[in-house]
Length: 376
Image (cartoon, rainbow, N blue to C red; front, side, top):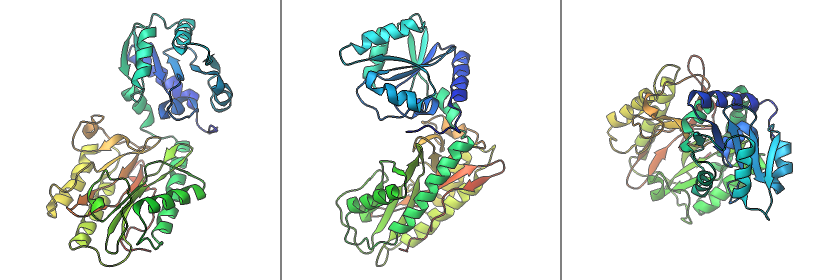
């Protein structure tokens, strides 16, 4: 991926180093993935080869990477110093030499990204006799508020998702399988010039009653509520949109009332988002509308989640605190949320999700495709 010249990743890295010093940590070590991309501009999927961005609390960051990655790293990242190893060498031995070369062999405390594979953590433990901890709070403190260039990428992703949403809702989908419709969505996303995010959901009929359902070989039938939950990727930044559509026939009894309630809850939640309120405040607004309408116990997940390089990332619009201490987090300008109140019956589900940017005095809506449950 070619780095966006408008992103100042070097400045982000300097802020990360300041955070390291505040936390009395000697270094930040990031394995392949979105956190590494956020600071360096280099993005590659996780795989079983040792490739780390090492950011000391002071001084220049370095890459430790397999030799075949040299050219890609030099072209995509601002980080100039590379320590490489080839397939004839023991990567752990070379990592030990690298740690010594940059003066971290006597480090006391090192932070790593939350998604680092266990095999890498064990190798680092063999190289450095230090205390290790996760860097989630440090990284999300930086990533929660998006820069203008990040927001531009998300806006473009949302625009493409809007276009694809209206295209697929105009298809004759009855008789297609969920897998076939998901493939159609992903094809159209790529035809518009974006990347699919690898988690397209098409949940029809009884499958729509299960929030984690992705897609299957079930055939879409007339009268089925079909939850379409998908997005796309632009320079690594994501969109996330859900619509529920009945392609032909009449929806099940109770569906329309539940749909209107979920949509009312989503609108109220979006209206409640502004700087200074807490994530729990927004969740309470949406949840109370759904429960007051008689659907207590049928809203099975959080009201919303942060959106950026990760599809589900802090901050979370939630009343509980099991993720990110999310309920007491104060909302700030520059945060981006996907807002998705939902109602799940025994045989069908309703979820309509939109993306919003927090502004100085409220929100800017980033997704605009038709919200009705009818096919287009």
